[in-house]
Image (cartoon, rainbow, N blue to C red; front, side, top):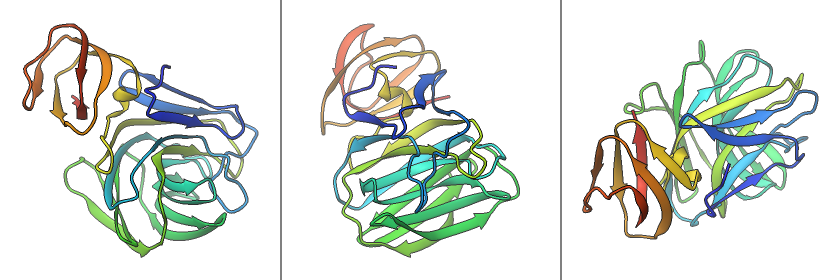
Length: 244
């Protein structure tokens, strides 16, 4: 996988794979060693980019969490590896929508809501000052508040994580959407330098920054303020890509 230069893979144990296929980003974690996000263990792989320390809304879609102990996936926002907030879906004796904050390496559980079963789930994290809120959605349109909490955190990076702990099983976490409004946001496909669109999509254009990508348009292109370009090397800013 060729990363856009905005993004960095963080793999503390150097044994995980982060890659992309069929419009999804996946984390592959091997068995036998804990890759957790807890006071005792912070070896979960992450994919991160720098961001502004401002109020924000971050959305992601988690496509895969399995029913093995302490497997999970979600959004992470951090100052560094010991000071961060994470929200997502995890299995801990049942599927849960879970949020925690870490200060100087010590975890405080903020939300721990049991759900009956796992289906692909949109998650949302918002911050206004020191007030944080965690939401979930089954359709990406209607969001339910899972909980709110207060944390003082100077953020420097944001992104996605996957984790295992407990019995340390092998685990593959799947995402197919990520968007944030405190830097130019991207759907997962934008992590890849070379992108082929095979489905209908919409692209929303921002003038906040520019990046170069070689893009092949094979279906319907809809955009704001620009005309559909021909196949080839183009320079645009995509605030959001959705496939479907």
